[in-house]
Amino acid sequence: VQLVESGGGTVQPGGSLRLSCAASGFAFSKKDMAWGRHVPGKGLKWVATISKNGATNYLDGVKGRFTISRDNAKRTIYLQLSNLKPEDTALYYCAAEYGSDFHIWGQGTQVTVSS
Image (cartoon, rainbow, N blue to C red):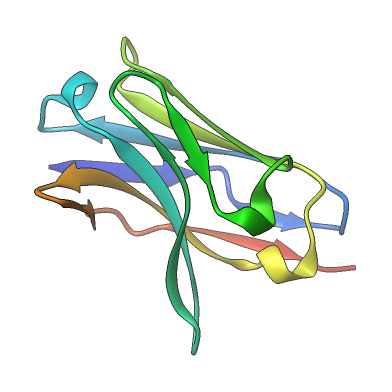
């Protein structure tokens, strides 16, 4: 299994980024997927999930600002980040369904929101 995240960077408050996660090594279209973020000292939080059927869920603090999507033909999920805030600064990971939870196999992509 391999998940490769990309698209992170440094943006000013109010800015936007689009994260991508390319998947390989498993039956991508049959798995729920997720984006999580890790802040040192605060642990990992799941910010968005998307089911194999396309149903989505979001962490309360990102609803209306983040959008998760998937392209099964490209074996890729995306996270559109808009109206970014300094508190969105984190290392963002994508994860694949694994048993009853999600598992991270990638290295993450850093998002920094700073003026």
